[in-house]
Structures are given as C-alpha cells and as structure tokens.
Image (cartoon, rainbow over all chains, first blue to last red; front, top):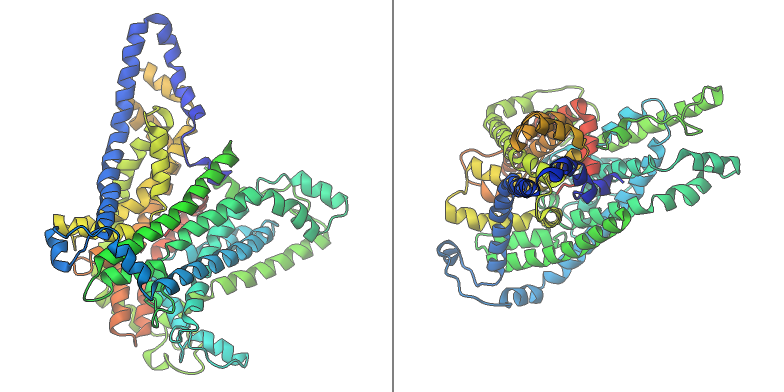
Length: 327
Length: 293
C-alpha cells in the first residue's frame, strides 16, 4: 500500500547495499571489521545533522511547552525565565474552566463530522473517477485544488461566502426559499460553518488516497462478479468496500490525527467565536496563549499538552494498524 | 513512488474502454456528471476570482453578480500597491525552507535507506510521531525559545520554524525513494573508488530527482501557506509573509473584499502552478506521507 510503504526503512531495503561487503569479508576479516566501523561512522555522519536539528527544533520547543504548562508564568517571568514550579495547577485550572467542556465537545464534533463526510464523499468520488471516462484524469486533478490552497485563502473565501448579508450561500438559500442564516455570527451555526469549510478542504486527501487504494484491487474480481450477474452496488458492497478496508482504516486514522489539530481555518473564520461556540482545544489553547492582551501561557500550554496526548493516542493506533498491515 | 498508480490508465476493467455505442454514451454521461461535480467542488475558487473582480459598490448588492460583468482590477491594483513586499518575503521564506529541508532530509534519507544507520528504526518512528504534533503546540514552544534567543520577528527564524513541517515528511520520502535504488549501482560506484559522500552526490542524488522535486514542492507550498508560525513568531516583524498580509487585510478593512480576494488569488498562484506543472508529484506526495496541518 502506498500509504504504508513509505514510513520506515525496511531491513530488506538495506540488504542490497550490504551485499558489496561479502567479497571483502572473504579476504581479511580485520580489514572488513575496520570497513564496517567506518561505514557505521559514515552513516552516523549522514544522520547527525537531522538528529541535532530534531533535538534543537522539535524536542527543545516541546520541552519548553511542557515546562510552560508546569510553571506559573506571567509575562515578566516568561521573559526572565524564573517562573515558580506549580505542578498540575495549570491543568487543574484548565479542567475547571467553563470553556473546557464546550471546547472538548466541539473538538470531537468537528473532528468526527469532518472525517465522516470527507471519507464518504471522498470514497464516492474515488469510485466514480475510477471509471475511466473522457477528462477523468484532468477533473480528478482539479479536485486537488482545495487541498493545495493556503488555508488563509480558503478560510477567507468561505468567510465571505458565509457572510450573513452579502454572502452567496445565503443568496442561494434565498433562491430555495430559505431564510438567511447567520453562519458565522450565530452561536448556533458557527461550528457548522467551519465544519463545512473543513470538509471541503479534506475531500481531496481522501479522494487521492482511496483512489490509489482502488488501483490495487484486481480487475479480474470485478469481471468475475459481473459475469455472476452482480450489479454495480453489489460489486461495491462485496468487493470494493471490503478490499478497501485497510486503506480506509489508514485514511480515517490519519484524518483523525490531522483534523484534531486544525487551527488556522477556525481561527481565521471565527476565532472560536461567537463566544465559545466554535472553539476547539486548538483554538482555545491559542486563545489563552496569544489571543488576548494578557497572555496565559501556562494554561494555554496545558491545553496544548492535552491535545498532543489525544493526537498521540490515535497516532500510535495508526502506526499499529499500519505495521500490522505491512507484516 | 506512487505517481504511477495515479496517472496510470488501466484498461482491463470491463467498463474502462468500450468502443460500442452504449459504452460511449455512458462515458459521455460520466464526463457530464464529472464536469458538474468538479464545478460544484471548485465553486468557492470561482467565487474568489469573481469577487476579486467585483467593483466595490456592487459588493453588497442583492442579488450578487454571479459573473464579473463589469470587472474591475482595482483589487489587483491594491495588491500591487500593498502586498508586493509580503509576496517577496513569502518567496524568500519558501525558498529558504526548501533549501534547509533538502540539506537535512536527503542525507538522512540515504542513511536510513542504504547505510543502515544505527538507531534508524527509532529515528523513523520519531519522525512519524513528529508529524502528529499540533502546529500550535510547536508555535508556543518556538515562541518561548525564539524570545530568549532574540529570533522573534525575523524571516530566518520563520524558515527554521516552517522547516519543521517539512523535514519529517522529506526524510520519509527520501528514505522510501532511495530504498528503491538498486544496490548494484551503489556498489559499482564504490568499486570505482567513490567514497560514500561522492556516491551520494554523484549517483544517489541524481537518481532521486523525483523525490527531490516532490519534497521541494511540498516544503515550498507549506512554507508559503504557513499561518500559525507566521502569526505567532513574526507578527511584528519588518518582513512578513503573504498569509499575514491577507490576515491584516481582513482585520483592517473588512469592507474591501475585492482587494482581499485579489490577494487570495495571487497567494494561490504557487498552488496553481504546482498543479499544472507537477501534478504527478503532488499526487505522489499526498499518498506517500499524507501530511498537512
């Protein structure tokens, strides 16, 4: 599977390179050993920049974030770096905050509704585009556009389309005889609006992965099924869907991990508002840390930690599923 | 690479290529449905372009003009006047991110694929997990680090931060691609007396053109599109990227939507160019690592 193929170097892949050593080993074993040590050092030299980079620009910022969440920071002590250790205080503050419940709920709704629609629509489109008709390749390529656009572009376009007075969405609803909806201004609709925009952005990703999964289903199966008189729907239910299950699992889990951390879109469209009506853990964390004149870095970082924890649970699940498929 | 599976046209399916009239009619119907679906999907993009050409006085008209019947280029004029420095900064940051990503990821990918680097498995796992960490958490961490180092509001700081989106993806792509390079080619270079570095530079890298293109394209696009890091780490800098240019527009004058949408159109150009020139690399990248915030 394409998705699974890339993630780690497989031992088998390293073997051909090592094959060159065999002849030398037959000669002098001491020489071979020195050779091997040099090769080890060379390999280390090739990964060393990356390891240093990861330590400096991944591990250290993450450590700083964890440190933020365990200390009682103010703006002054943030600069000076002498904030007192406060243990779980920030986490307790966050859990007791009236925003926590809604933010958690919105994160779950946003993530689940988004990936369900993205997956269903993406799958339907993948199956549709799998029938090779004229222009199918070109049109499928055009479907990638929403995914490639900078998020600020998509978010501001949807903002204007959702504008209560002059937005085209309300105009289209008006043509259908529906009263105007305060998409981004009403607490009842803000979350729905950002979910709609997010589904739009995520469809291409699902389409591409599921479509590449369809390529691996042997055509003979469909031929045999249609000889047996199975209709299109039967073929989908009995062949396509079951055989696509591994790819579907990967797509959904990855979608879950990536949707959990969506921030730009919501922040640009609603800033989590009005009130807290569309705030998720991601936007709330940012709101606490950078959204006001009086930053609360500690609680903000604590919410970030909670978000990492949730993402990692599904992330590790993803890795497990993927490895099992590869084995 | 999976580029092949994307572009490959398969003819063995019963409904794939039929020459009978019934098959052709069905194909035509499919094309028609496909066109309608694509039009629906791309409506927001069309609307962005339409609004960017709408004169200011027609902006709040009901019903809105569905076509730019009286196009104005005032919005684009505003882009030329206000946004050129932002676009330049984004270009600089994008290219810088590409360079940094390639320098770090290509050798590491080679080491993981062919040199049996010790701890390679753990490193690959770390890279996979690294991609799952939310951008806002990284942004907050970077804010603290950059504040102490005095890196805030600088374009080079933003290059470093943006590269964290692309480096894990890049290593994965290079590892996967270079694993597929036949070991004999590498052994042959070695027999000819080339050291590991020479082999890497003059045999492995030229063979990895596809991976180089894919990684470059995505790291550029992600750096160009980045909003979280820019807003957090470069909010008050002299050189700010285009994403902040648009954001400032929205914040300041939420009336001149033709200027905002014109900027959005211009900011989308790299994505459009990418799609036209390098569609198969794009599809390969999506399937391979499937990463985007």
